[in-house]
Image (cartoon, rainbow over all chains, first blue to last red; front, side):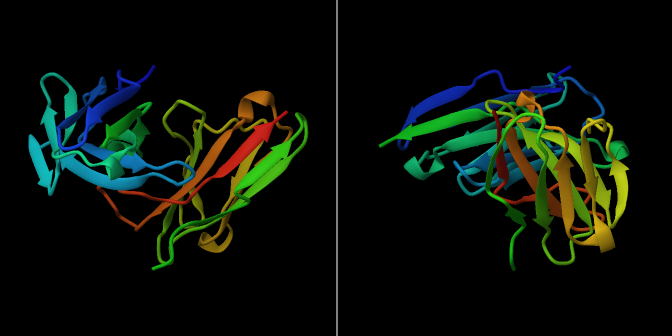
Length: 113
Length: 115
């Protein structure tokens, strides 16, 4: 049972445009959500997070939106840059489950110059 | 601050052989995780340590996988005997004690190919 799903395996956008990566979850106990970025041959690195008490968190070009009723979150990158080309993983944790992360399958973002 | 160190980076073995991976977490990080990432999938938690005690190993195939964290610092993950489906990247991660936000710091991973 996949509790965190990223339904788009890949996404291609033009440099300067907005990239929108989506993530859905099924476990209503999840109360913290994170996005990780992964370059080839490297480990994932933390990008941005959001608590379930918020519906938006912004950090520079990156904004994460959370829709609890729809159990959906999205990551917006504006403007997209070629260096943003990577695999993006959505992850979720539940405070009452030891804060262990459950990851989605990832979305490969390609930003074309 | 030095990151999470893992070795070896790459390992190729035949099925039924054994393999061991080593991880050195960020200094001062009490919590250590081993994840398995199969190609095209997200990382899956195998085991979580808090200091040298196991917090969760519910997804660790205990008939063939074992892990230990002696003295609450370094950790080793062993597979014996390996199966073809164990081909994956094994990621070690660490976090500060009480890191309730779930933010983990990952190593570069150890890529295992089982032939």
